[in-house]
Length: 191
Image (cartoon, rainbow, N blue to C red; front, side):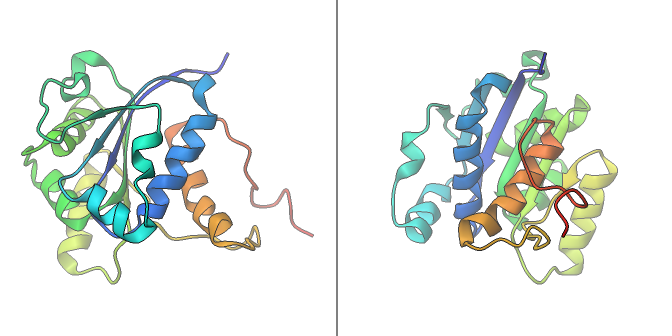
């Protein structure tokens, strides 16, 4: 039997809303592997989504949306036993606050909970280039148990569309989160 995940999805105002949309689209299809999903947007994430994707489809998902200042959300405490948090895309500001232990909103509080409870925290930054501050913050989060999974597509699956390129990243994120997904794997599809 497949483990059912209790998962937090956070979307920040970093560029890359298309990654968040694809991830949410895939999670809808994985409902048989999900016990609960809590969704939280940073203060400007919806605005960036609307600008980049030219829609408000973030409202159309069947997941409960929590306000960024709602510290009564269940995943603001380790006692709720959420097992995974994915921040996609993850702004460098959010990454920096997590690395420094600053829990000034629900996203950074939930990330702090994941780290202290030794649960999976997956950050998907979409920033280039990295400054030394970014790299040091990524190092800190990695040393405390977080996973940095940059939104860097792979091409060995020979993606033909933007959607397929984006999915190379979101598939990797879902793999890291422990979901059972159908994905092209290195070595089993080579000609």
